[in-house]
View 1 (cartoon, rainbow, N blue to C red):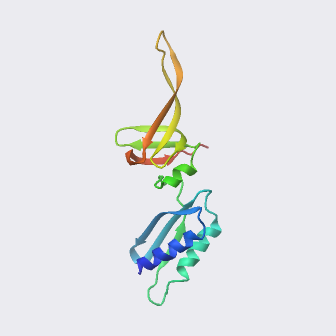
View 2: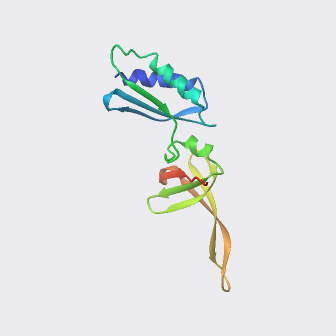
View 3: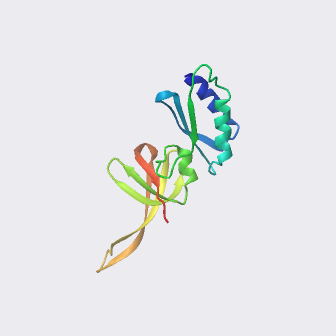
Length: 153
């Protein structure tokens, strides 16, 4: 399998729609190619088909038989690309670092970090009881070991 040719064809297909971006490209056993793409506003099925055709129609099955799967990340897939964070602003994320876990609403995503906001109950500074406080945490991408969108039904 000419992996470089597949990468070139995939790049060409993604350049035709600038709102799409690559999440993962895998060359698996038995000549299986798996492409995972995402988009700033989601990925319509016809875009997955267009990308698949762009790759498949420009490779020669006479030389090597292969299977090709073009898909989008599933709901359990962790966020891996900075553009995915920007796409999910105002959604609840579960974020793990090496030492802690956070769950909050993604309020900002820059090129270096993300900002999460959430409410917590804490003891009052004076007197008995608890009060609700708003927490804000900024995390650098390099410190995030895993981030997933929390799905609420």
